[in-house]
Length: 601
Image (cartoon, rainbow, N blue to C red; front, side, top):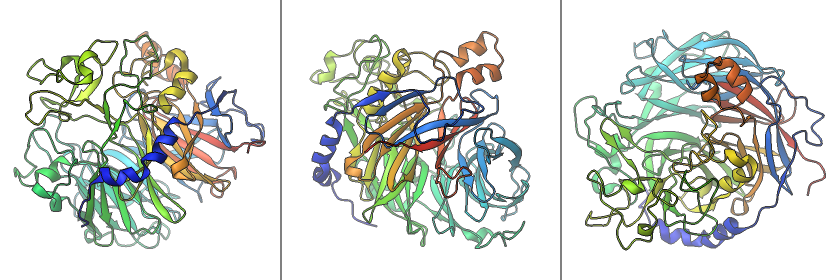
């Protein structure tokens, strides 16, 4: 385990580059979709009549929605995480609502076609248990040879879950399962295909009566997948990386451990840190030796040695200063619309999705800074700024610059953490910490910030969406999410086009995908924003007024992008790079073509 060093000191090395990136102007161009060089792409199933697009003047790539598969299910997580298998030209979309994985034929991306559903219930696991009815599928990953795995949580959430094995080119029958930790929320495969890495989130019970430990399972996979047989599935293939080494005084500074101390499933109060930390998402280094795990509520990242299956480092991501030019936000849903500005608030990055890539021989982590509050049983972490000082909460310190900005049109309605920012004596809040960064960031694997997109997401969506700025996903309500987490960057994926590296970031609430060129991470630049959504249609309102959910969703388009995967041209059924996006609110899985724009330098 490396001895933690002061992160703030090391961040000074890149502060100048970050500040320059944040304040650099971006020239934008709005245009109709149908890019030069895309072969005259014709929109297919599930593409709205007029997708939103706003691009930088020097954009080298664009996104064109090709087609979507629709479940017709509204706001039930019917499409969450998506994975692709090139040899069978199949897309695998997690339907958490049904506890299964929908298998799609995408040989024609304009018309994705359901083949069957991969069911996980009833599968016998290596430890002798059986995946029961009510189990929830959370994540899926597929190896190039077709070996696939699905992370499945137990019906009560706090018991150990499973990792179910299947053949991506098969007929939907599971090949076996391993028992893993509590609430396996995400699974990633190592680039060499030898291991699966599972983030066992270990969330508390909804009533906060039990809080299991968060862990990371490292599973040794069968080397070959031959026909319907993946080799022996033995429980001893599973090893568990814990956070026990960081208990008590060993917890690095800034890693957030807070809230009530609730016993684990065995009734023990041991390992408070381990019970508090909740692994959310995993990315693996190119050499397959190291995993990096986002601990969202803790605002931290853990490093896992995969050969030893042990946690070797843990660090806080710190916070961003929203009072700095280029890092502002719109903090209120009562300020008359889009009003992005600098305010005396700090933002906890709290990433959900995390990915990694290499540039000039160095590995970088890329995070989607969504933000999330803990709210279990009677414990509620978040509060509006104007409510600080009421109901037993400490007030804003009188000498804080925020003290004069408590009205609804200023900071009063902004949701902030009550677990962070208190003065040492606990008498008042000297700093206000909002949830999430409303951005994406690039970091070194030592936790140093290289680039942050600042307030560009809100500024771009303000121009692109107009009155629908900071809307919710279930309904169209302009400015409705400004007091919370804004556009809410949820997840991301990385891909290479024509020798350049791009990150694709899904905005859960606002909808759509942001694309940035991160070839040189310290010079990352906005490329384009595209949303396959008709903002004139408010799906929830239409359904409440009697419309059939399937009709309302067909009109609205994609709502709530949750999972994204990049398909390189070499694996694509069209021989052009694609982006697949699973949208949890609309229940749609949508394919975009990544167009290489001609005539651009």
